Length: 166
Image (cartoon, rainbow, N blue to C red; front, side, top):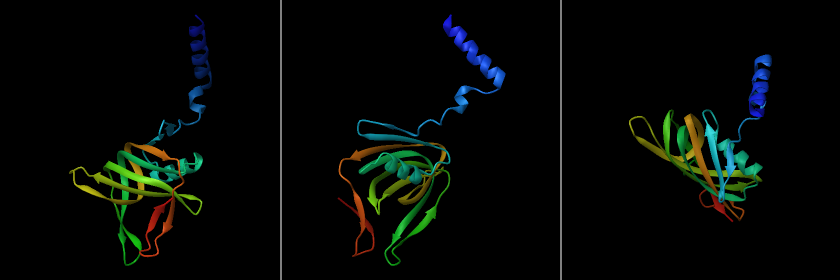
């Protein structure tokens, strides 16, 4: 009987104010802790790299490896040895068949190194180093395995590439 009274009061409050108490609640968290690290689930429009950097900072992740999948709008980069920059290629409406990478630190900020393979609606595959990644329709699920030692990135003087060390 108490349940009915509580439900009635909640429904009455909703009808009287035109709002539900759930609407004022904070948005659901985008990740949960697991026994090996974190599970991050992102939704349409989320910036994957930005969300990973924020998670690494918020949770003080010393270093990690990650894998993921989902629907995305990627920008890949191919390392140009002569210019020491990435030549970019952007795609839209692709399925992320595989995401793999690592989280390390450079200049007191998270430094991501991500590679991926995506397919389009014809099942043609594209892949490489990810410069940017936005969630398309659906979601992106990323499993982050945390390592106990701090991983860092430094520039290799021989070729100008940023490499991981510990």
